[in-house]
Length: 303
Ligand SMILES: C[S@@+](CC[C@H](N)C(=O)[O-])C[C@H]1O[C@@H](n2cnc3c(N)ncnc32)[C@H](O)[C@@H]1O
Image (cartoon, rainbow, N blue to C red; front, side, top):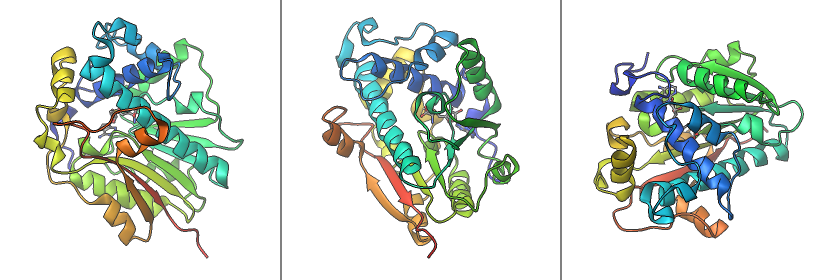
């Protein structure tokens, strides 16, 4: 269906390719969890990091980083992921506690442990889509911890470059009931056709009253800040070349496409939330975060 020939298909699971980015976010969440002024708590994150050979030597606490907060990767970039985690935790919890939304869909879920760590109302079902080997690693670690989800959880091993629209209804998702969707740290790895298909699919499966949050990078940001300390330190310290993993084709205007479909949208910079919470990254020169946008979209209830 959509383009499946893409360079980050080479490595499955969390050992490398795009899957290893799930470990990068997990390490950042572990560090955030241990901060005295933590924005988000994820007790599972450090277990993922320790369990994978690719990341077993990475820090899970800022005290393990010799230059601490001045380290661009484990200081500022990790704090970015901590802030993102908090903001999107709040988004999901607000959606399910405010009304009748009981279906939660995490696309590119990676090592997101929200099903296990957040307080969900009774009747919630959390669908998690990621590639099979990433989910298998996640289950191996969570199984070893005897972790128990705090809501019904339905993992769906799928490649989001394939035709995945039928997987959710086939797994018990009800398109007639409202839902909340999260696309965190995923879209810039997908070819534009897969992103457009994802947005169309979310719209098609969303009843009125549904909500969606996703992260994009402005086109110009993809390569403009190639010398940003966030990219160069991630490459130098971990061997992860994020720019090589990003899809570099022109991006669709997904926020605009949703607005055309009748959704109301709000587009924020991460820095908006740094100011709100009084913690997190602020703009700096040559900044890989300059083009990151967090989009929050609501589908109006049917009248
Ligand atoms: C940066 S991680 C983010 C994971 C999670 N959303 C979080 O924020 O912790 C990107 C995730 O997207 C997943 N991903 C990338 N391309 C994918 C694809 N084509 N199909 C399914 N998952 C994909 C990766 O396996 C990885 O888990």
